[in-house]
Amino acid sequence: AFLTVSFGLLLLVLLGVLVRVIDGVTVEASAAAARSERAKIGLEQEAPLASRLSDALHTVDVSATDGWEVVTRFRPGTGVVAGDTSAVRTLPDGSIGVVMVDVTGHGAEPALRAIRVRDLLIHSLAHGHDPADALGFLGWASNDDLLASSVVMRIEPSTGVASFASAGHPPVIHIGAQEAELVAPTGPLLYLDPDSQYQVARVEITPGETVILFSDGVADVQRTRDGLPEPQALADMLVAEGGVPERTADLSIGFGDADPTDDQSVVVIYRRR
Image (cartoon, rainbow, N blue to C red; front, top):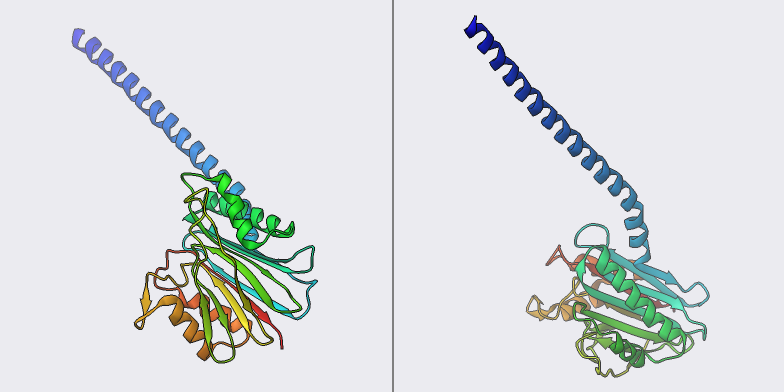
């Protein structure tokens, strides 16, 4: 009888332990399922935001300006958003404002920072400041964990004169009928020094000519192609094989395959004949 009672008590103890284990597993499974559901809902909520952010990275509005065509291409290194952004738009005085910004990093946070810098620069152009001053005004907003390159350009549609300043960005390519001109940066990267100074460069875009802005994911001065710095190799290829703006943009974005994890952006500005 004693053995029977002892065995019964042992079974009750084991049953209690088993119930607690099952309850614990059930609770953990429920918690894991809840976390998974919250993550799924979070992704579903963030996906439209990421899509809208991607759409906002590169904007063009020159509908009020005759005689010019603008084509953009963008290929993020990872995901759908990145630190490259650009804007081309007709400014209040009738000129064309062009800004490209490349902020270090990938994802939503660099994208938001890049858009903020871009919009500050376009705003400065819209208020009549020249491209060099527009870049210089950003010095007060120096940020230790932010590094960016940029090109800021103003084009006079009637004359084709493009005035621009470049903060450590890859060279601007000006493609004529037979040759290409590469214009080097006119100052250092943004946010390296709050007292940085920038110079203004100028090119004249005659009918049938093109100006191209691109990020270093497309062509980097530190890399070579066929024995030439990548920007020069890109320019030579476009002179030989380019043509209409769409083809020029496609060739340019396809050129940047050396590092597929880097963001790639191209802005092609063409003056019609």
